[in-house]
Image 1 (cartoon, one colour):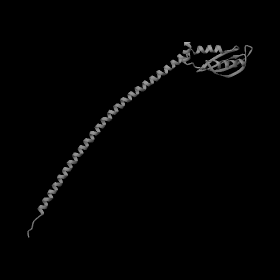
Image 2 (cartoon, rainbow, N blue to C red; image 1 turned 120 degrees about the vertical axis):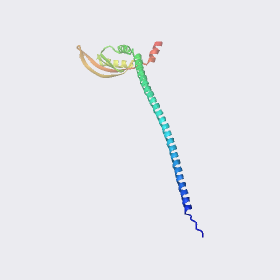
Image 3 (cartoon, helix red, strand yellow; image 1 turned 60 degrees about the vertical axis):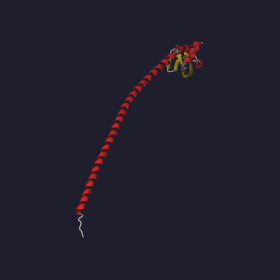
Image 4 (cartoon, one colour; image 1 turned 60 degrees about the horizontal axis):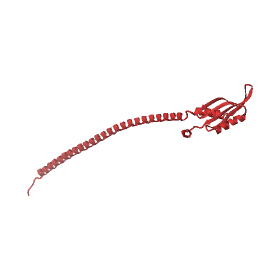
Length: 191
């Protein structure tokens, strides 16, 4: 029988397998390194691109916020100018109101009524004065209610007083002014 020593053959195969294993391990390591490097590069590129987009958006947002601030400032100026315009228009529309008011008061005062003071607050006028009788005060209030310029007369107070040895009725009457619009004035001017 022939004896064959297989130990060197096995040893050679083991060395070849070990060499194959280390080569495969090296190739896998190199491949893993290449994959890691490519992944890192790709992610780094994406992060850089996203950072650039974010920076662009921040610049655009800052620019838009400046424009919004300018628009708000312009809107405030516009509102201020419109408010001034409304005040001027109201003054223009009611500039002759005092003259018309005094004319109307003079027309509506019956005999035996004497005004002591006239005070206007907004569209309300408070008239204080003296009357020879309560019936004349009533006539005055009815005249105010029938007037095209005055309305809603209210008797606040009436009391008997002696003025210059005469017995008179002191009164306080509140009356509202009817604001005129621009249209009736135009119609009156045309006719």
